[in-house]
Length: 202
Image: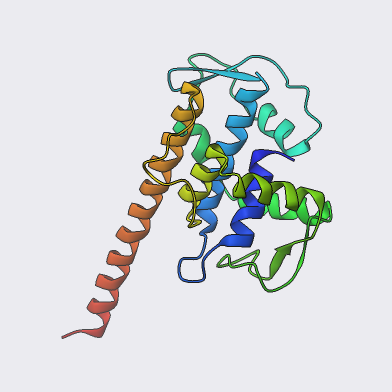
């Protein structure tokens, strides 16, 4: 299992009914998780906020291999934030389909996504137990990504984060992207409310 798959399972398992995990937020966090795993297997390095491919990783996870294949190998290379938006488009749906196909998800009542996975839950598999173990151990990267995706109970703000500078760069970019997405949502809500008021009239 990869960090992204662990993150999906945690988000599905622990998303709060008072604050459901948004597909867009989760997709951005999943793209960040993939990039962190690519850094960890040395498929890429980060030159500031630029993603520099270092070769195809020796991984047996098809989604992580797909992420590696999607890297932009042309200089000046892709920025981390651009990668999050490009790779993250509907990525939560991709992970849901893959985990269903692998027998890691089943129909149930725990899933709390607003669409798509709203009736799914993680099956009782070694992968699910591993993801929950990482969560309960307070693994800082998983906790930070889950917090960005809207899962409560992650890493406290005053707890030390990852020491790796590249990982920190990715986590900060994920947080910024999620905030930007929320700003877009709020702007659209205001515009829609104003439009509705025009039609209702005085």
